[in-house]
Image (cartoon, rainbow, N blue to C red):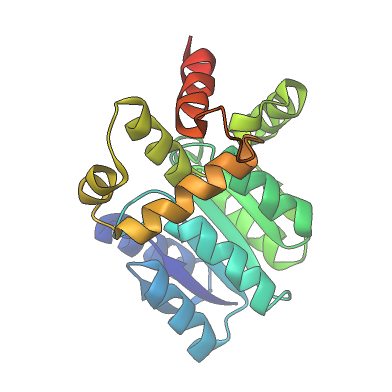
Length: 216
């Protein structure tokens, strides 16, 4: 089996490479960020991509967004996502599109190498490997039905900084992105929170109020 590993931790990346090689698999490329991952998959045409959720430069959701893009580009590619946390929105989106050949495991729960290797084999064969905690949180999210759950991790960051009273320029400086990028995130937040433009209401204030209410 030909595998590409995307993981910014060199120690973990090397450990996975050795473990898979001992199982008889070939790690054809490794990547330290999402850009390298996309290039490696295009170049090597692997059977499986093992992808960390949070990768450089912002360590928010680059890896899982790249996984979604890979599934769009090459639906036959099996993708196994490794995460420190459950990114509910992206996990749900990844599984909702086509759960065949998809895995989502929490790093802390992968304590047995045999279980991990079996998950890789199962995903490569077109099956699924979903951590029970991921299933539990996705079910809880479905029951809640809160519009804030639709926000991406980056949009939540932006909304949190809005709640601190920061301007778009200040948010851009804090996140090391362009102000235009922040404006796009803010517009997306308004849309997901169902806050259309009105003459009398200040959408920025209403969005912050929604955020503070959810945090109570």
